[in-house]
Amino acid sequence: MSQGKTNKFAQFWDRYSTVSILCIMILVFGILRPKSFLTPANLVKIIEQSSIYILLGLGEFFAILLGGIDLSISSIMALSGALTAKLMVEFGFSPVFAILVGVVLFGLGIGILNGILVTGTGLPPFIITLGTQAILRSLVYILTNARSVSGLPTSFQTTIGGHFLFFPVPVMIALLTALVLSLFTWKTQCGRNLYAIGGNPQAAWYAGITVNRHTVIAFALSGLCAALAGMVNIARLAAAEPNAGTGYETYAIEAVIIGGASFFGGVGIIPKVIIGGLIIGTINNGLNMAGVSSFYQQLAMGILLIVAVTLDRFFGGRSK
Image (cartoon, rainbow, N blue to C red; front, side, top):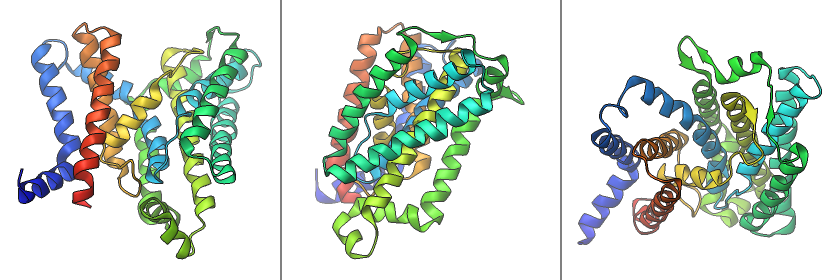
């Protein structure tokens, strides 16, 4: 491939890859299952299911924006959901109080802890969050005694997992979160500083940006979004499962990378993460309808991640 054609492909990949992949997935599954996949009910179901992937992807976006990664988000999602369910079911706390504890106190708190460990130890985020992932998943099983927590208040299920004017509330939560975070990255100095740190941490430090503080903020946002995904998940399932979200960190990473962010940091926008989450939801839904085994679904997701990262490695740098 000539240099000119390579640069043109790099520009196309940078601008239209996410939307193109989503359209291709819809077209493929629409052809394979035209009577079931393209129905309005199923398309709404895909969007609703994708809300969890979008929320997790939004959190993962900030870790990847800094050139790092957060592998603990799936465990934060599971533990925050289990904690919230326990507070409502076994201790009788109101849904509002339980959500505040699960999302703000726990999700945000664990995210801050991850950031402090990353900046304080100097270890790669991969190592720190891999460790907290295992710790938090163990705490889920300890807290729930490895059993499902059911009997959630109806008010919680209808408010968080229901519909408002025929529109799924989980989707509204995901889109509202995305809007707030988009404004944060585009309109605030802190958000712009995160891009600068991801692009060149040393140059950002010389420019007077407090790298450690911004790193803690990025991981705090990651934990907060993961906890929101935990709330949506238990509301949709009407129960908190101890193994909830297992492996979902892969989905979040795929949503971010397919959405155009770079593993090398400093690149990406939140609206494309939304499309990335929709791609993950579309693939899962389409493969389920096609009767594909879950083992092969994981295979497909793994291949998709490798392809996306490879294209980012070879063409992403050319478009920057």
